[in-house]
Amino acid sequence: MGPTASGKTELAIELAGRLPCGIISVDSAMVYRGMDIGTAKPAPDVLERAPHRLIDIVDPSDPYSAARFRDDALREMAQISAAGLIPLLVGGTMLYFRALERGLSPLPQADPVVRERILEEARVTGWPALHERLRGLDPVSAARIHPNDPQRLQRALEVCEVAGRPLSECLAEGRSGALPYRVIKFGLVPGDRDALRTRIADRFDAMLRAGLVEEVRALYRRDDLGPDLPSLRAVGYRQVWDYLAGLRDCNIMRNRAIVATRQLAKRQMTWLRSEPDLVPVDAGTSAAEKILRATRVRLGYT
Image (cartoon, rainbow, N blue to C red; front, side, top):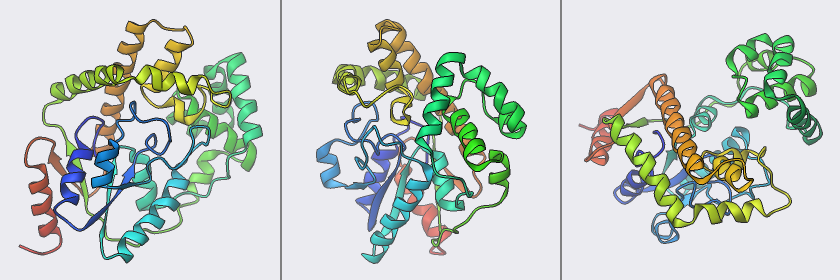
């Protein structure tokens, strides 16, 4: 696990070259086809040398979820294990890691009709107004969901309507499905936060030079895609989408994307600090050696 731009992919490829591993991507944006540059998806030649499962598996019009990820990851882990290899999960979508390890609370399936009605109301009244409505329906969920977090607000209101009870009650029922694997968790933690901030800016500029705007423009031209889809709420994509819609100029788009990516990295670091049994590893040199040594200790080999 680790924050964005910390070098997780490079480290996973190095580990897979030294251990009998099969890599599984844990990234909520890399699952989408046609979203390559802005997700920092490994290049085709890299994927040929070190295949990553759960990359390019759905269309951007098809909302992907933690529940789908858990099912897909368990299937891939079983196949890797059956081949005598070790599942190596790598990515920065912490919710997916938690769903895999701890299971999921029983929640109703997404209802496209209800979801579209909520989105239409948001377009008319704004998300803060819907947050006030959630406060009346489910004050526990409203307290932990920010008024400007449309994805989580939408889901909470959808669950209230579809399930007929608050999201917080559904979550309190407990989780199902223990993970049938022994897990060793490593957190790739950058020792120099300023260097990470600089790397995030440099990487986004490199994405722009590589054709990120053109990549998003191809998505923008599609009739079946819009900014409310989970795929296009990914950091970088939503800022470029606004630029193409004429809502921002290029400089503002760039600055907002960099700030949003830095905020994402900060949230990921906060999540890592709360993760139990995590082995922190400095994202600098010799990270692979540190992981190999720690793994031997965890498994009882000294």
